[in-house]
Amino acid sequence: MIPRQYLRENPEQIRDAIEKKGVEGVDLDRILEIDEQWRDLKAEGDSLRHERNEISSQIGELKQEGKEEEAQEAIERSQELKDELQDIEERADELEAKLEQALLEIPQIPHEDVPVGEDESDNVKRYRRGFDELRDLPAEIDPHYDLGEELDILDFDRGAKVSGGGFYFLKGEAARLEHALIEFMRDVHREQGYREVFPPIPVRSKSMEGTGQFPKFVEDAYRLGGGNDEPYDDDDLWLCPTAEVPVTNMHRDEILLDDDLPLKYQAYTPNFRREAGEHGTETRGIVRVHQFNKVEMVNFVRPEDSYDRLEGLLEEAEEVLDRLDLPYRVLEMCTGDMGFTQAKKYDIEVWAPADDMTDGPEEGGRWLEVSSVSNFEDFQARRAGIRYRPERHESAEYVHTLNGSGLALPRVMVAILEYYQNDDGTVTVPEPLRPYMGGKELIEGQTPVGESAVGAGERE
Image 1 (cartoon, rainbow, N blue to C red):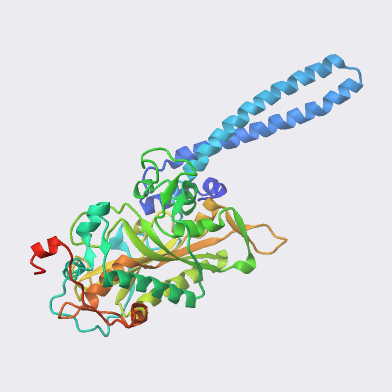
Image 2: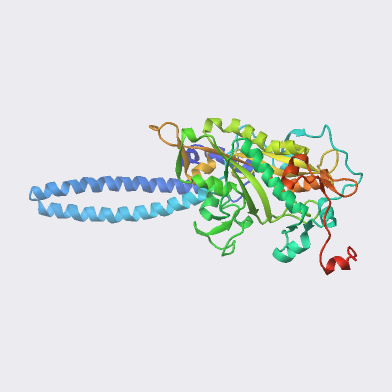
């Protein structure tokens, strides 16, 4: 959330940020007008309060002096002032509520180093890793969605039957691989000094506002017990869209100690989002789904340390791909593709070699985002009231928050099924994951079950 003082002193910088981030529907002039009206009412209320206090102090003196008529007039004037003050305070409270709601619509100011651009085509490519020594790949690589069905380890039809489009079953070795990836990532981040938490999955509207998901992205969330187009209260519940929400809000309205920082949490959660997108190669299979697993890293740091921590957080997320020997690239996001809440953001995109994309690597295939590593500065901390006290005798200040996926599972699964694919249609299990899979080295699939398999000629 943008501080009110910053709003008053830097309206053009805010206007510039709104334009650079491509945020629509923000009437900054109206917000400034509400703020001015609120301040005028507060000033008028302070004046009335001062006058009432003076009159109240005079009433006793007038009575002592025997000036009963003047004392009565003072009492009546004091009551008039009380009524006027009550009216002004009610109007001021209404305006303040409008102002607080309007401030939630203003995006974070991008850091001065962030490249200016309109969309993903303006993102800056920082580096690629893992392409120097690629493993030998089949001449024809089956896309994960075809391979997964051939091996009977991905089941899209039954997922849609049970829960609708955008949901799927992981079966057999794929289910085991998913669990292995989760445990592997948790162990990596534990080595990096992360404290582990297992948060609740339903989160309140207030928590969604605290991290910036609401009010802007209500339509993307899964609501419990109501429609997304209906008004919501602070205590209404939503399915967790990312562990960033519950973990950041763990410390909502709290004051941390300087000795607590930096505070690093990791959390595994299933996540639920109404992912939009056109059908086709870019979204087919498990690239864009409504439920997915993810290990998230959330950091609380001192303001002066947040940009060094951003680079460290990026390295911590990359380490997962480095250990799995999966090729990837890192992008620095431009203002127009960075997001509402971020001051600076990196994306890590893994290489999936089966399907070619328009802007894919020269080796063919496509890039799949598996992590966004972001610095929010004090934007989330102000919304959620998260502060720290530099010294016990000093005033509390807002912390800076950062987070990054470490990593999002479905697209890592896609990369493994395609990059580690063999000529015979099996998939080699990356070496670091084998201890988590009972020493298993190959994914060979399983025999389908049911009459549908017999009808398809897969069983006799």
